[in-house]
Image 1 (cartoon, rainbow, N blue to C red):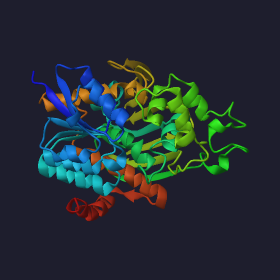
Image 2 (tube, rainbow, N blue to C red; image 1 turned 90 degrees about the horizontal axis):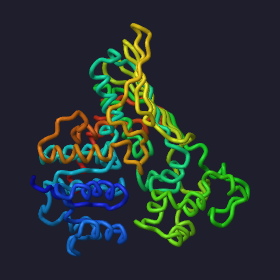
Image 3 (cartoon, rainbow, N blue to C red; image 1 turned 60 degrees about the vertical axis):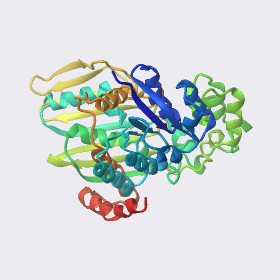
Length: 435
């Protein structure tokens, strides 16, 4: 088998995760170049993949200015740094794996889809939930008519209070101007999954949500700006950064992402707590994204869904499919679905094939990280036959559901998706001409 080659743009946790897959299949795939501004991360990829100095770049621009040197390009930069390198990679004709969201604005998303279509380039958005045994199993149950015609879906994403504090208060995605709205960054997965399950376009969206608790008004009396300076409620506060980052040496995700080092020492972590947002009181950060939100969705064929996302829980996803002949209920933390059929009033437990319970980023998103890599390379070899892969255009149209939900949350309007898409189309042409 001919070895497939990859260049990597962005060597943070997601870039490392996807290229670690390549390390597990050295006879089939190889990384041949990396672009990453943080030296520690760049050197990690260099050493793991035996890259020469001249194939390691601080910036993506010189790498993507070179003639095409590989079969594929993985783009795993921050949200607002997706669009420009993706456009450049399309120009070079790379098969592209692009971390979600595709871009930080709806205009850029649709312009990217147009550009890829015109160039005939495949761009796969990392909607990893599509590739989990859980959601693939659920899709198969729906498609085979297990509960008849789908009428309504109730879907919950419990973000988890500590995950919220790490990623969406102290971390990279706490401020929408630096990254993107939370409903897009965290839950574009879920908007995509809902549309994929029902197989109908979304027609109307309504949403409510706010940042209500993780605000200065909730700050305990006497709490310092930084947890490490000693807090009167530090012993009982679940968000004490000293406990979460410094004392908990087993939490490699928190320690590596906060320090931006592959193998941080306690001294590195302590320095981070003293100098960055990761050490700040969660009630004294510059976060502005919501800590709870609900979305009502109308799809074609009179199918309705309601989605709930909140920080105030321990974390996890749960879904109920309501059909004309019964219901399906599942939690990603379980290894089975529960199916109730109206005809015989019986409840059946259906085991999930190849179940990988859990969905945390450090656990491979319930098998989704491995699954999307298998699918990506299968398509690259012309051997993909599954249901999970979709076009960039479909992925970006499902992104529009998240953007519309944010628009509804801010304005209080019910958003007609046809009208909203037309508004975006009226503005997007300028995006491409400016590149």
